[in-house]
Length: 77
Image (cartoon, rainbow, N blue to C red):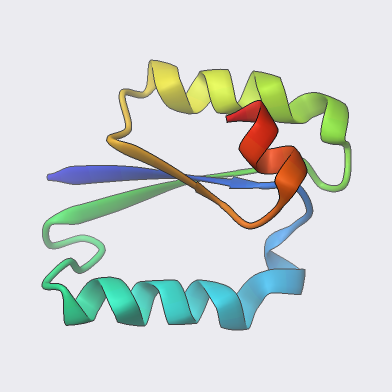
């Protein structure tokens, strides 16, 4: 089972279509949640000061990759 960490600076509400595109692209590559993939989501809810803590949590979960969609998320990761 592969594990991806998703570090979101806001909430899932604002990026629903982006997340669906990510999932679709992963499916095209043969990765499906619940089958051979787990995505661990962490959301800062607009509190950027939490991003480093959330990124560290994803690292402790031993994810293979951290995905984010913003500069603050990338800096924290």
